[in-house]
Image (tube, rainbow, N blue to C red; front, top):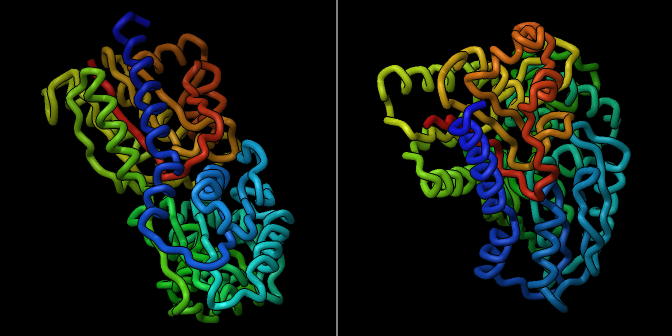
Length: 419
């Protein structure tokens, strides 16, 4: 690797680190709470991958107003204890017994409240799996099985949560109803394109905008295997109004991209943020980014070098193989062939939460030298893509991005860097 390319790799890591740091939930919670009035006893329930950081910030602002608190987050995402809070770690992206234990404890905490009390929900991505209490007649195994099918068939998060809402006692506004007559304020970090509150963590305290017809259409679209009692649950409508609750979006992928743009500009790149709504198949996105890189090298369009092209969003993967990886790793690996031989060129993709799929990596990055390095080592990119095994190949050649759990979750950041 030449000195220029080595510098681009360092720049990529700097952009990733600083953009994620800017999207940490501390500031978002402070700004949201500064403009809100919480009058009585406050029960704080934080749900999601960013739950610990959100709760840790809220406790310092609430002081004596905090009555009880509960953090529900992914295994390994709680950094320490928080005064006044219980912490329950649970399964993600598939719910487990701790997901049910956490939801039951949350229901206990909001039971018997008065109209003078406030429930502060701190919501971030991952909540749909971490916070679960199946409807009567629906089992945890039903929820696990349908979630697994949805994840491997290429369904997007809105489709996945449209199904999950209808199998749960605490999603689609139902938990907000349980809090009545207390007032409910949801402060939300969005990991959903378009920031739809009813989709983020499956909207535990916001009215549901989807319909049972939508859910049944998704079942048919992906030819999902669902037993009769699950199909029957999908036919029941969810709450469409919630008088005691309101929601505030406090952070999203646009903030992530803005920070990445500022860092890239400081490092000497001309910057174009192409979209904050990338939402296609990961392999298609990788091929698209590679095509843009080739165009820049050949023609100087849409920008002259040195340049950074940034994209935010969340792709999907249609899993057909048995390998290990995540959508960001697959995007990067799919881009590698398209930039083969391009000088001083790098493509990266990373999840802001630091965990891409069921792996310890946040994403992946490749350079124009990656294909030749694969060939020299006897690896076939096509074989690894066919088996959805991006992690193994990127790991072998040093292409994984490992940040560890970051404490936030506002979708993914992808980029092209060329000097």
